[in-house]
Image 1 (tube, one colour):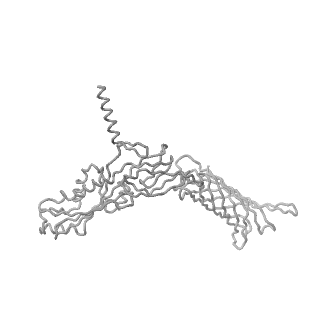
Image 2 (cartoon, rainbow, N blue to C red):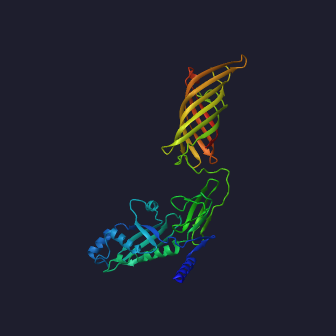
Length: 423
């Protein structure tokens, strides 16, 4: 009994060694899928069935005893039955005519598309069949062929019409489309785009095997927050089975998380800006001296972005008709903010709020100071660009309205730019 178990175990190891594969020093299991999901469309020449029906009624040429069915569904069922028995095909799906077949293939994740075109020639008494195999993710042409079948006198042609197509399809899948898995080497957390509808994330082992649905040319992109993003073209075939990500550090790192996070986060940030003042009446001069501090948080998901609150404290020095000399403006405003990610690096935000403003004038000749305190309203927008995972540059514009008794001093535009940090 023990000898038998040992013998069977050695047979298993021998069989595994014959079938197991090694790619770039990494051994893979021989048990990977060699069955493909296929979606197909079948088109007929214009008035095909009307012509077939008339020919059947009057027994034109070699057409007798309904050797050509007059319903499209019968042709489709015969095709599905013929190729459905293939060991290389996992599932076959009939496309919906009103929807683009490429869209259906993507939605159902069927990697191989078969387009069939059928026409009839009664003078030659033949059926012409043309077919094209296309890959869902590959940009290259796959396979195209055509053949003719004589219309039989007594036998339904669908009993053997699709045999050649089925043979070509099975050989194509077996000899061309099925290739060993591709070994991808990249840092942990790298996102790989281009080989599947969803991005592939590299695990902690820093390598992963991926199965290419069909051979051909694939445009790929690898994204990692600490390395330079890479884009390239991969020729998937049996002689090209390794894709490696070069680890080139970058100073400007792509953010790995969007603002509308599902994890618990307050999106707390602080930024310092240089700001200027443009009076509401544009015939007055612009005053370029000022600074603004902004502190905020946007913890709540809302309309595809994030909503929250912020506090703005600003200082500007400028001339005004209220005083004979330049004055200092100090203001504080509480805002409601809305942030929306445009991509992985850029954020567009809008804010609106109310606060208090103070004008302070100091006369060095008399050593006197004058103050004026009033309410203000403001709104604006900004654009933020992340240089690092947390460090960002920002630029924006605010409109501030003062509730003063002087109609000439009731509003101004404040453009600004600066840097900030998101915690």
